[in-house]
Image (cartoon, rainbow, N blue to C red; front, top):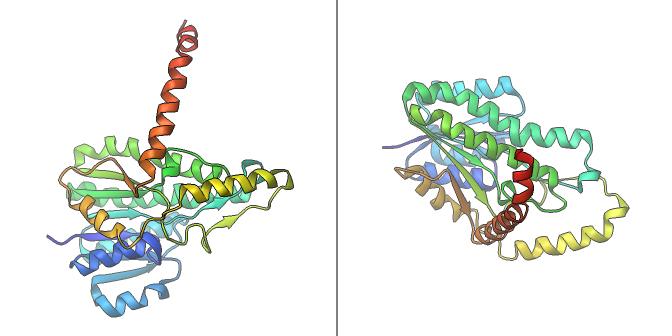
Length: 273
């Protein structure tokens, strides 16, 4: 059976590739973008199978209206993809209040508003699948993108709780955690805080570490077949990595955490009283 998708941030990167993959196999897609002219070629190619919607996900009322528009057009929603987001670069001390709030408005609240808008339709259907695009930076953390890490950690917590809350309604939740991919995430779509010279030396070190971490970036087009496998699975995972690097990063990180917690367990017991 064909599926109806609602995808935010469909103008480029993962969102665009996943929209194309869905459309090519005969599914219908409501695709949102700040500039819907970026979707003109897909409209020309796929006709009324795609519904382009101009949307800034930080606008809650617009989010509600966009999801309602998609449901009215297609009659149902099967896959809701919260993909819209961007990377904010800067050491924690360098991040301004405006930058911090803007990062959370898009990466956290944008996904929250779309999720809230979709849930009444999914509950009424007794089915649906919400895909939350997080990052390996949603379970680990790296210098110079700390506020981005914070936004993705928040999305992870919200999504894990959500999965438990909606399971009895037949709704599934999957958190996708990509490693480095050849998207525009670190390019034109990224935002940079004003640099503090005190961090210049460490910034260079962090940049070298990042290069090593994403030495072999993944192919966004190849990720399309992976996302189709997830939405077609009878029992999809709560969490799934995209790319080969994240598992190694997560393994080292979690082994270190467990070792530290065990080393300091005597203090935990002391605190218990």
